[in-house]
Length: 274
Length: 311
Ligand code: SF4
Image 1 (cartoon, rainbow over the protein chains, first blue to last red):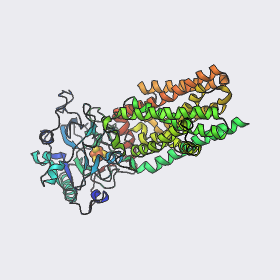
Image 2: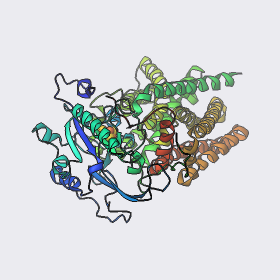
Image 3: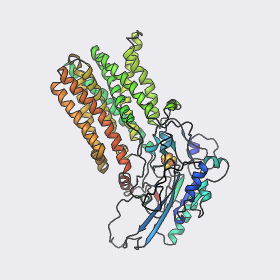
Image 4: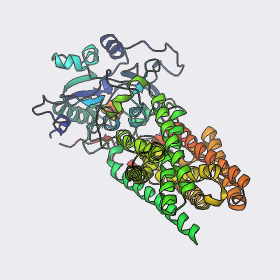
């Protein structure tokens, strides 16, 4: 199994191995060390200090000032369902930019501020971004966002600076349980497959991989997950799709509409002459 | 063998009701630009039609409408940027995968062409050059009027992505409505007759395509009926409808044409605001993201989840 390397597609001649994250949520303890380490290393502003009042999670989701986000879910599985015994359980998961193989944010960016690095990751060049805002609704995961006071779009860089220094990203280094694993994507995918099998053998039927499959709507994620429930429970979309795949058909529709406009004018003048 | 389920399949759930995707951050200037660009593009078509039909009075006014509208539109685009002083970066690269990039380049052709077509005679430029500009504006105009539909469709926003086949027709119709409406306001009834027909055809296209879009969208279509988006959409339909009827019945009189035309222009403007607002509403409620994706997952696709990883 080999990961199609998007760095090759982006024109790098002999890129280093594609790297990524495998976030194994089954061992996440919700400590948020990743959130803190990310902010520290990347100099991300604190953002609003809010109590959301829904759970131990007071960050809510990824955004311009949150590049790692730990979701916290308290669940009582209804008795009688296959997986449920009426017991209470906590699900914790550290979310991050997926560094999509086919990245919507990068595709729609009109300035080239968003680019594919030699490591196959997706990064915003802050000195080029002009704050057009297109990437924000384009991302199917709701990752990238605008800093309102600054106007530009911001998101996880997968610690581009550290990668170039051959150091692992801050979040992965800080994670005390190895829930966040960093490495060559091929290796991570194999490791994830073994982990899934192991959990299934232990009877953890709920375990599933998310973003692991290159056949999904974004060509597979560079940052993928092992989840214990449906993706939407964690705030993740069940079937994310990059809009670019439909783009030729969208332009065809626009072309047809443009011709309709011309035809309307022709009809209007032809009718007028009668 | 499986036992029958005792409880029904879990409803599409979400993370504390929080949105899955981020709503567009675009403000009023973006729908205003879409309106202005539409009015400009369709006016250029109208102008060339009028020139060919030997109706210089209508042609001249439509050309001016186009050039003023596109100049205003360009200013609106810059105004909405988070970093307006970096607007030049729009032309840093040409990216076929980005409808916004393609649109920016299109505007560098269309804008000057529309301006030249309008002002060429006034400036005493060679007739051939003005003619060329006029043709160029007429060719690029319909694309200027419709590419914005591609721009919004190429996102994860359910009310836009789901309506990607119909939105260009909504925008094309609204553009003709605005261009015809503007001509009705600026041109005497003696010369405006084709513009009247153009506006009415546009209104019909816009209303019909909107109807189709809502039907195609299924449950997501309800955002076009609810909240602010619903109010704006109803306002747009009302203005376009009233404008159409007034134009139809009294458009041969100066006052009827002016009132009907103004109403059509306002309807076209309101429509773009309705579309933006519907997009925002559909992005802010996770059920519109999760629901339709769940349905694409269940029958065949596994989506982003792989229970048994490929070996
Ligand atoms: S998850 Fe969103 S922001 Fe990250 S690469 Fe994919 S499209 Fe871009």
